Length: 144
Image 1 (cartoon, rainbow, N blue to C red):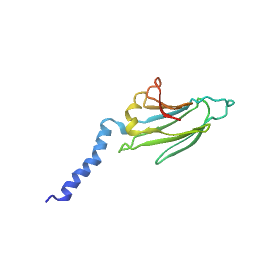
Image 2 (tube, one colour):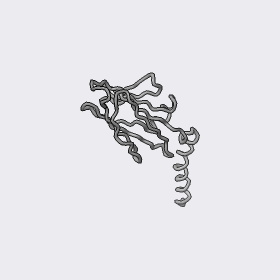
Image 3 (tube, rainbow, N blue to C red):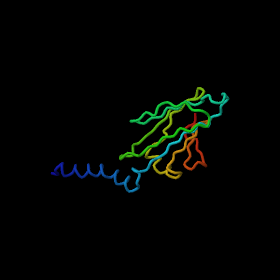
Image 4 (cartoon, one colour):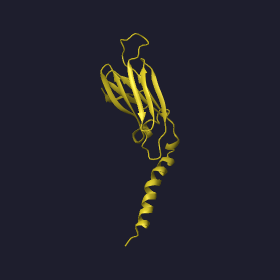
């Protein structure tokens, strides 16, 4: 009969070390990602009156609520954790419309956000929340 210790230890070591090896081989643990959310909503409001409300956070860090003016950019940085579970999500609301979106998800964004200066670019627009990996082409990933 197989000794459980002889079997369990190598399996445990593999599941602990493999994510670290993958992340280290690509230097993913050392990259500082820049997340940008820009208010590109139309506004009939007078200049200086905010039109977009945004609340972003992760499991460990609440970035707080931000009330944004037209064309204002909200930016923060994130690093990927050892197990690649880093997640920042936001809740946006504007004129009766509301949407939850994942502003940074390690397994989704670790490669696509490296293309443009390690930045994840988001634009909140009248018909939804758009993503771009290069600031040229935009995709409506979260329609209102």
